[in-house]
Length: 69
Image (cartoon, rainbow, N blue to C red; front, side):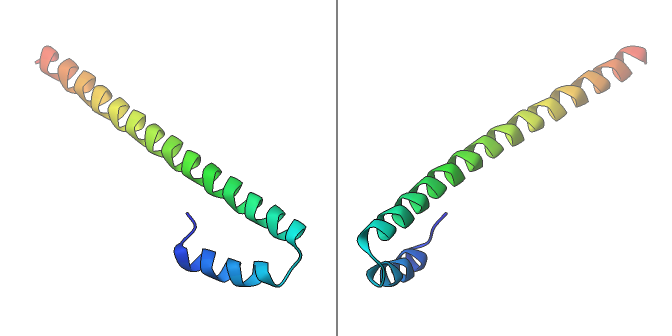
């Protein structure tokens, strides 16, 4: 994610260039921020699914071992 300090630095640089370029940079930063947050939420979802799969596979294995005793 973008930090406040990144935005402050960017504001300084955006003042030094023309408006059209400034708007393109700002739009790119916004898109990047959105994509980064979506990727983070997708990664968290995949980690949750993997965690559940590990729990279920462990339960299956332990259930099989117990039933074989």
